[in-house]
Image 1 (cartoon, rainbow, N blue to C red):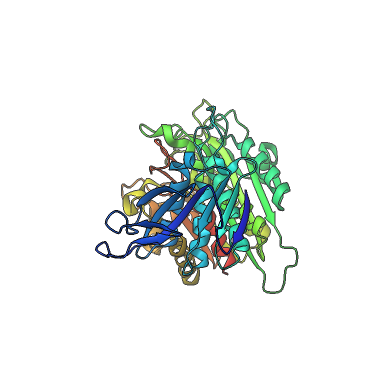
Image 2 (spheres, one colour):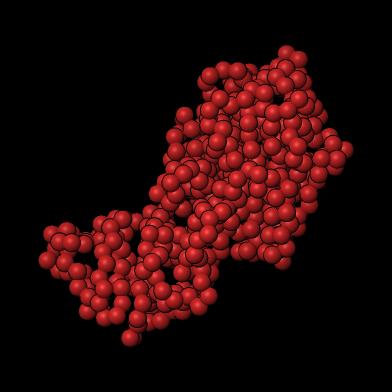
Length: 476
């Protein structure tokens, strides 16, 4: 997509997108743009409204932003415009940027337009979106240069598009090996190193919790390690560790899921968020050292599957009593966290996972659950999430909940067995494997990483966490 910024549109022929802040519906003053006038009786900038005028050899799309638009609403509005109006776009399209349009809103608009090219029909024969065709040009009408903002926005959108794709592809395609290959290929493209441990390597290292989950599947598990180092790290360059749950399909194991298994291809959405974030971090060339781990495997049912009442070992050396094989995500994260902290010693650690239905029951589909032992991290993550519409809400990690994971025969058990506080006891389990790290956070994104919205008829990936993790690291 070619981008050109111009101070005025002269003899332009094509589609012109005109964002409009909400005005008084009773105003007698019409909304005007280059001789095209729209009465406030039919359009006054109400949020999510669109009014079309075909005049002067151009299609004018007046786009309502509402009175006080935020990043998420602007992103969504322009994603909708790109998706629903793609027949209206030709090789030349213009976007008018109002003088009072801040950079973050412009970023959201650009990013939303590119995100709107996403099509979940990966196995259908469909025509490419006009924005993706060779020769397409987006003309920006603005008094300011927006090249840097547009470049950043498109990198954000690209990372999100890749993450949508990873989460939405079927489990016979998105295998652990596919994720490993994606990490290697993407690392070579944008600039991070990838190391992959196969089953034998993991066995030699003692990653028994990870391998216990994988042992019922014919698909080879992959322990994916990605390392991004900035070109010129300084004394203030921070080192951040990320861990993402990479269960490419979750049957529940022998505690088999009785409902909802159809959507369990999404159980790697936390891992996909980490993969997408690493792509974006490297693409933006952030001044931060980032080490990211995605333990990737299937939780399948077979005669060799691990079973309830098993006692297994872990990379940390701690023993784990298996109460429920459907509490498998925390097992692979345990080995991921232990390996990361012991071998790389990052200053900050964040893990992200579609971990519990309990977090959905508690917070619904509006925000993810945040657990952390560090108030500064809590504030920073929530601030970053609020700014871009990837919101988090902190839940307690009090030691009173520690009893829920105490085992009589092992160091810890993987499930409380109680119908309450499931997200909290899962977080306490993960905390057990952080070696008392002083700056660790756990994000349970089960309710926000995969869901229903206007952009597809079926449930699909949201890329929640990609921009959030990147912004968090960028602002440390």
